[in-house]
Length: 278
Image (cartoon, rainbow, N blue to C red):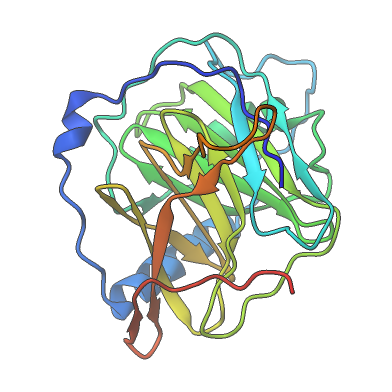
């Protein structure tokens, strides 16, 4: 699959990120408790866009983001690059390997800015559901989806806890023209990977017996949010690596992340492999 990337840009992570310790794998009980909390929260729909012409509370946006539907090999895939403003820098020193669920009030504060940025893309916002919403330090991630077609719209934004102000909004849309691939009970699918150059977002389907998804990205260990058969996670670093040996004009980007699954019976599956289209 060809992957269209934005013009290369030199971006550096905050030095503090390099000293982050990897998180230990949470227990199944912790995963289930976090999932139950998140499920209660995302069941509350975000505020409707009652005034489409009104300006969303977005002060600035930044670089383009690439979404790569790596799990849609047997389907008609879409790789969509959305411009999101200037190339101003971001600091992720507050990032945490373990997420916390957003409250309904936080979703109401962030959702209008995210939906405004997502409007006009291939994601049908009239049908899309908010399926996951998480906080890691000063930044929050929202994930909107339709299952047929299988399209995810992710939004990463800066929002201080307890503050209504939202800025640094990055969004993107990726997926395929076919229906979503279901995950086996004790497995998962590898969905869209969003490469922000200095941050990455990924999501996918999680089976009924999967209580937790842990992602290893370089020296970082990331606990994903899992709820209602989906998982999502973001981290300050790369998810893709380009193959320098590819012929000119071809893009050899490939995922460089691995996964561990925690099942509801407490079993931990190391280096779990995703289910892909046959």
